[in-house]
Structures are given as C-alpha cells and as structure tokens.
Image 1: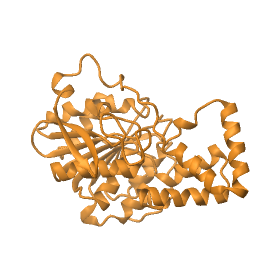
Image 2: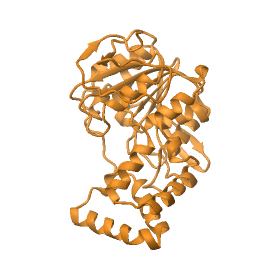
Image 3: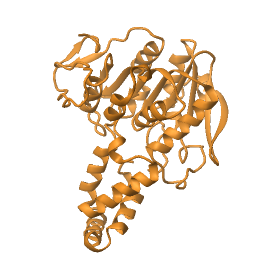
Length: 333
C-alpha cells in the first residue's frame, strides 16, 4: 500500500495519468480497477541486508520454525526463547528478517519472541489476491492467526504499515496485548488514498469507485483504516501501554504523524531518533535496547518536541514536531 509500483519513468506516469483521465467520464470503474491493482501491488522482494550482518548471533538467525493457517493459506514464522510472548510484525513488503536485530535484546529479558511473514510476504503462502498483492487488513489477519496459536502478548512490536495491522488485530481480532511498540507508523489509509489520487490524477468518480473496491476487498471503508481513529475507539481496558519510535528524518513517513498519535493516546511515549530513516531504525542497538526495556516494564527515556503532550480527547491537530528535543517522559502532565 505504498507506491513502488508507480515509480516508473516520467513518460509511463504521464501515459497512465492520461488514460485514467480519459476513463473518468465514461468508465470510472475501469480506472478504479487499475488504481486498485497498482495500489495493492507489493514491491519487489528485497533481502534486508542492512539488518542481518556477519555478527548476528546464531540464536537470532535460527529460532524454531512454525506454520499456522488463515483459511486455506499458510503463514510461516519463527519463534525464539520462552516466557511472556512478544510478537514482531513487519511492514508493507517486509519480512520477519528485518526485525531480527530486535530479537536478542528481548531474549536477554526472558521473553519469547514470535515473528512471521504475512501472507504474500517472505516465505508465507500467497494471500487471497495472489503472490504480488496484499493489504494491511490481510497482514492483520496473518497476525491474528499467529496469535491464536501463541496466545495473549506481553507486547506487540510493529514496523510501518504493520502498526495499522496490529491495531486492527487488537481491536477486531483475537489478539490481546499489554504493551505496544509502533516503529515509524503511518497515519493510515486515508492519507495514502489522497496521495494515490495526486500520483495518478484520479477524478471524483474514479475515486468513489476505488473507495468502494477497497471496502469490498478489506471489509473496511478507507476512513476507518486510520491509526488515530482506531486508537480512540479502543476501550480503556483494550488500550495497551504505547511506545512510538520514529526518526526525525524519516522520508517515507513524516515524524509528525507519530506526534499526533501520541497526543491522542493517554500515557503514550515517543522516542525520537535522528538519522536512522524509515528502516535502519530497526537495526539500531539503542532502539533495540529501549524497546526491550519498555516491553520488560522498565522506564524508557522518551523524547518530546515543543509542547506535545498526550491528550485524552481525539482529533487535535498534529504538532509540527520541529522544536528542540526535550528529554522528558511523554506521559508527563
């Protein structure tokens, strides 16, 4: 649900936009099908070489393999250690291997780590829409199937689009979790839909058709697939303790998305990094240590920017996130 499929030559983009403009008045349904196919197409698989290095301990490379089923499809994953369960959830186009650097710090704290490849990702089976197409809801269903096998969680640690999938599993699925760590979370589908409209030059009729196709595909209207909307709908007893980790220089998902989420989640904490970007943040030793401490119910030196504070009421405008970092607890009054 990103735009790797759209990153072609300027000529290709111009031809595509022209074709969709021509379809708008006479065949918006055709335009919507094309847009849907592009939007949900997974990027080409890439081995996460930046996170698996020659120094990675053997215990973190191996683990024990497992399989679970979602309908007629097999979800494959690995588990390490014993103790309270921590689920690791990759993002769009990712694999469990991207999260391997987080395994060691969690094992050191006596936790059982469970990670998996979502359907149509990594080593798992193709999902309902084939090997090169998926969505955040299907990734959430994959997590739900794994949670049925391994049970309630001490924590869920999710990267990027996996944040939306994890919140859906907590709200609508079988997953119960005491704590939640979201690393570089996006705001959700409405913002991505607007970006798609701009990229493809979609008209109003084609967009309406696309919204309906998304609803039929996922079971949710796009407006419902938004992190703050889901978070504020959770009952207090359903809402895990939250740590959000986000790099100030993330070029894929702006940092202010996380400041907004933290504002709307009472007691949430925000840990900001600088210079790690959207994916290298997963391999940073300091981030791994902070995540493990939070999961182990220990204090984390979180950071805030300017006057950001968690608030009990939803819908506040996102802070600009550009102030000087203040070393203070995000849940402070």
